[in-house]
Amino acid sequence: MVGSSSRADSAPSSISDVLYLIAAHHVDIFNHDTAQNLNTAHICFIRGDLRAALRAIDTVLGDLDISQAAYADMLAFRLLIVSLIDQDSAPRVTGPADGAHARPGALRVVSLCVESNKLWYSGSLFKGLSTNQSAIQHSRDASPVWRMYADFLLVKKLSDIHVSHQASTVISGMHDLIENAGLHAFESLLDALRSVLHLQSGQFERAIVSATAAIRIAEQRATKVGVKLALSVSATAHLGLGDRDKAAASLTLFHAEPTYYIMPDSVARAAFVELALVASREGPRAAADRIRAKWHLLGTGSACCIEDITRPAWLVGIARRAGDTALAERCLKAIERLASNNHEVSLLETAAEHARATFAGEQPGPSSILDCRPPAMSIDRALPEPDVTGSASGRSARLSTLSRREGEIARLVSSGLTNQQVANQLGLSPHTVNFHLRSIFRKLSISTRVKLNRIIAQSDRQQDSPVSSEQQR
Image: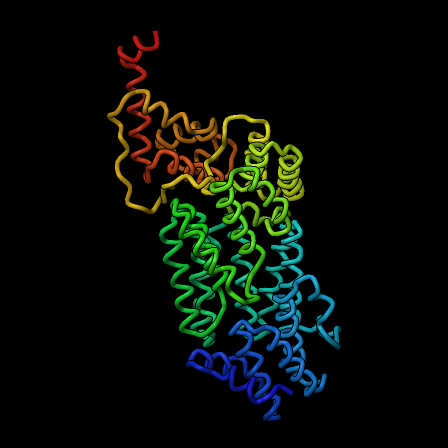
């Protein structure tokens, strides 16, 4: 039995705690001590003390009869906790009455969620996504907290493959669910997830604002939910802004958080920031050594590898600069294997294309925030007008930083085509065009299509001018 001191340490401390306990109440648990142990499990869970939560829920299961409706829900809760502690062991430790997996309700939802993550992070993206969707459909027969969990996992998968609009829609639904069901203890998840979408779109300041809001809300709710996710985003966004010191500070806080609330994509995000800092301070050889040591954390076998589509090519580039051909080949084969096994995700092939070009020593692809080139520009920042009145060589140098594909896209966009029209003309996806456009903006230190058009038009005029022609002769 969980002792009184544990209960005191895990007592409700806010209205959000009380509302969560009400939402998680089970009408067929009559024993007072059992109900208290269940409350302890829930509070320990949102505080991030998953070991204590697991002990409490095991005590609850020992008090219940298998015929009680709450029993399957407790098994589901146990499976969730175990999956957060050690996802690989989750399918083996669900406890007795494994036949309950076939019943509608919480246990089926959580089992599907665990399976969807196993598929996703092992590289079976289509199956992982469809299994997650099945979990959401089955969550209609379960309490709202399980629908929120399935939605949360779906947002993370959608953001991995850059389906941002749909991810935003799911987050809005989660907001309504939290408000209507009183699940305010998980409110910090919303801003943490939004911070990921801002990061992906190159809006680094907004990503930091959302990540900071998530951490602040978590502190107010006395929970650890979403904190490590937010810190990993904050570290990456500071890196994107060229502030290595703040990136390192966020990374230190990330590693200092004693919580199991973390998913593989957050682990990978933090690992890439660490690699980038090592590369910038100690050089490519030290970074290559760190890549080998942290390979298991980088998510190279799943779609979180392309949360930032430049990651595979960046890894290859670091290995090449370190003179480590074997490591460069390993990095290249990882993204090529992932792309080959998931033809439905066109961005994987785009990432593989950049990695192959880097491996071959061709013209660099899109710039990466991992290169730590301060100050990297964020698209949402108020940017100064580019200097279009300087020398012809200065303008040429600026445009020459674009890759061949970026140059094609820049000229099509400056001619007035939409991302969709550019995608149709070049045989790309709109997501790929948008990604390249963000890279173009960063390289040219601009934020709008109007400024892009101005730079290209000025360059073209200079090329056509008599002075330019004379210089060329």
